[in-house]
Amino acid sequence: MRLLCDHMLGSLARWLRFIGYDTAYPEPGPDRSLIERARAEDRILLTRDKELASRVPGSVQIRSDDLEEQIREVAERLPLRLVDPLSRCSLCNEVLVSAVPEDVKGLVPEGVRVRHHTFWRCPSCGRVYWQGSHWDKMIARLHDLDLPRAP
Ligand SMILES: [Zn+2]
Image 1 (cartoon, rainbow, N blue to C red):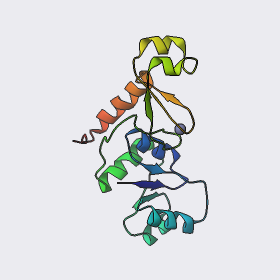
Image 2 (image 1 turned 45 degrees about the vertical axis):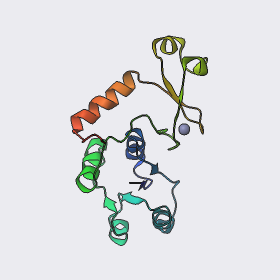
Image 3 (image 1 turned 180 degrees about the vertical axis):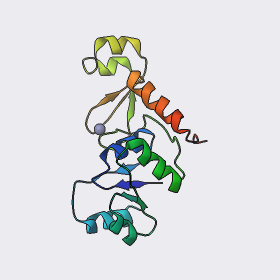
């Protein structure tokens, strides 16, 4: 399941990437380019725009401004699953590659580097991820949402 968020849904796009979905989040542009991209890349369109949602079959209209509500709205319509957290860059949707502490010397605080064995790095923007307190918080929120896990 590949997704496409309109420009009003930046937090939702980052969240969906975090749980493992290939989620496009294009620059602001005409509705026509969103529709074309959804079709060309076989993505489900998530949009705040009621009129746009009504024009695109299979799209999901998001009504709330609140991220957790938005996730619930998506989960009501789509079979949302915890696919593979920390598999994609939240910022650019790129698939992350794993790295060892040696690889991230100078890229993360030294205290973090010595306490973790595994890191993930975005080949596009270079951002480094690890299972720190932010990750724990995200996972806890996911458990609160009670999404089924991918088999
Ligand atoms: Zn990135």
